[in-house]
Length: 293
Figure 1 (tube, one colour):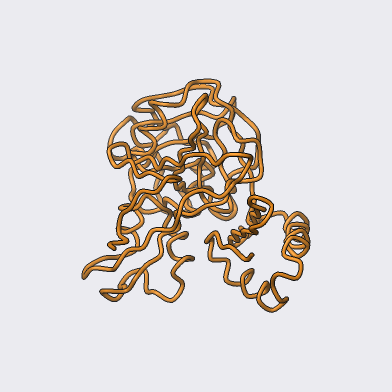
Figure 2 (figure 1 turned 90 degrees about the vertical axis):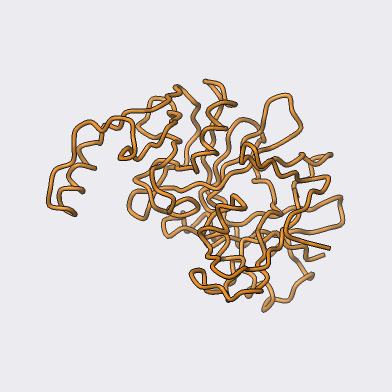
């Protein structure tokens, strides 16, 4: 059987819009989808594969730690992380989990969730965890750099940054932008291919062009937005199966909350994994949803 593309009951690929749509499980279960597998072809590289499967660059690297992301050997089988555990939060509106660099949109009155890779604020310019809403939608947005951005640009490049950047190829917002509440933070497109699924922005949420266009066309103003930081996700499926999904914590993740998550993980695992096996899973932080029982 060709494992390159497939559709199962819990996940369906929608290439026309680039949105990855998952059917929500019944009875409060939280595991969705199945992993996809891809055999590397000559000339492939991770950035291109990530775009083809609409997953994050770092997520693809974490799932395939022993593969060169720039020169993967032909015929190498890559695991594409498309089996997920839904974040532990109310499932409505938009949920962005910083640790996994993903955005979830729970479509109202529909039993589906749409999942997208995103870029977030780089170290020192963290995207904040917050509860907000979509207050405004803009097509062909104008970029007005903040004073801090202009100061950083002048220091790094030795020349001033324009006060206003009109729509076009030089505009880092791309073609669409969604504003969060009354803040300066946006969910927006980009004029650069690299950076989705990475920490690369000045704090805003970046998306691939096709993804932000889809979101712009489907998400109404006043949609709730929750930005969270959950490096460790656990689910007890059907009262019998235990599933884990562990991501590398961000450098500025709250250390006390992370230590509490590790303690909860240890209790959750119990005697189903040895201490050394659990430690190995934590250190690997593959981002893959795995069943341990």
